Image (cartoon, rainbow, N blue to C red; front, side, top):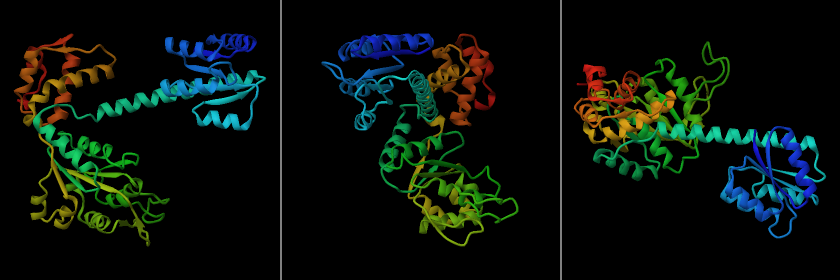
Length: 388
């Protein structure tokens, strides 16, 4: 059931629409002019507003402008007995969801209500999903090492310089890459992640550069690779140190010439992509062992960012614990649990060889196995010795 407001200076229109909507199990309220309508919108949340255009005093277009500015989530349907194409177009340009001409058609009203409410649900779900994604990729903490990382991100994000991010497993290299993309002028473009360690060496070239139909046995149709998918955005080559030498050669060409060629293809494809790479390996050792190209290393490492391990930013543990307690309890549909100060201090004594990833897993375990408040005894009992 939706809460709907009808703003119209004709009593008959107001009352008939109210009856129709209430018959369909909606909650309907009415306002005899634009000023009263705005007062009701300020006082009560409405899921949908029907508003007449021609009214004395504050007309419908002024109401629309104010609602669209102050309550952009509320869809507004304009209605008028003097409906013309020009008026309809103008109202849509100003942010109206739809325009209905008088005399009002019952079916048109009901269809418009259904579509508008469906759109509202989709918008709310999209916002909720976006918020979850933003929370997932937040950089939590105020320690000096994390402050240095944020400062570096701020400096490099406004450029198209290639960035090589280093650090141990679970330190948050992907968070740094996403932060660079989100603060760059490419934020409206895609962020395409490639886990080079998870793709078999015989498939990495097809994954990165795509392939033509018939290029190999299972290539039943043409396929765009990750570089093409990241056009006008950012490609993140995670665990780039695990990439095969043949793929490295093609990536080097892509960086040098801004061109790629699909597997089995003859022509070149020009690309506009920013490249950010990450690795947990010492690439200089890999170069010395002949497993990584030195020229590619120099191409990737225009900017070097080393992400600190959790043991180097233990001052962030209280904030991280609070963040994960909220996040995980919300995921589980339970009330947020508390954690004692002594328990936090105990968590600070561990080495956290698995970094943030291990820390989050431990917090999840403590949430599941502890009572309402997590104590130091819970930490001692349920934390694996590996972290000590």
